[in-house]
Image (tube, rainbow, N blue to C red; front, side):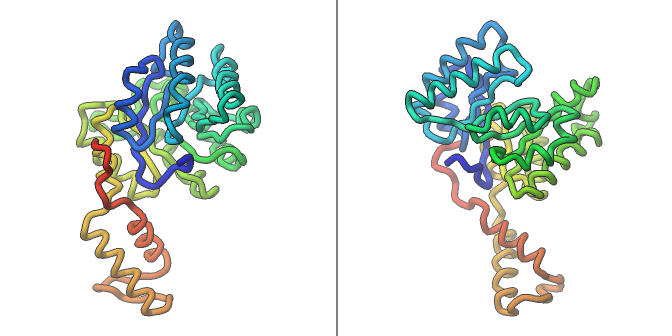
Length: 282
């Protein structure tokens, strides 16, 4: 299950909290074991050991966010994963934070990598990063971007992203789309703001993100619900597909609306989305 699938809710889990690993697996579609931002410097080694010990029993729905390539922990993170692969054949997806240059991906050419664009340089270079052979998906982050720019907040008083952050989000989506690779939408850091999360998740689905990440188990169901089309949406999609098949292509009118090939592709996308409640609850 290495390929990022449509509609996944991807949950971050701190690497120094192995007591949370099992719960995370039961709640989310995929788990990111985190060695970077959520782990204090003095806990990096312990977190790395905990993750390496957990990976043999974790299955394939795991991503490991290593530390940035400029950090003092990066080499040990990568070496630990290579040693694990040598011993057991297990090689999880790597989430590379603060990705900026293709050389960073070349140094990890023996891994499949999700590129996290969260600096000005990373956003500007997103298309080049997306073209790398071992880049399997793009991810973006607004808080690190604002820090990199010298700002103080990614959102306005209404909870909406500022234009520069929205621009970064769009850039990553377009880069992923051009290279036909999945785009993962960033986390919503206000845990209690479930309305904002629902609104943001719906927008992500509408514009073409494949999946969305989160930092709290309570966000999983909200993200899944955003990707799950309503009965009305599925009915519309089924009608569009049936009508276009009957017309053998071209442009048709359906319920007073023009339908052509781009609308057909949108309808097919709706029909790809999950409709059955996942077995593991949110």
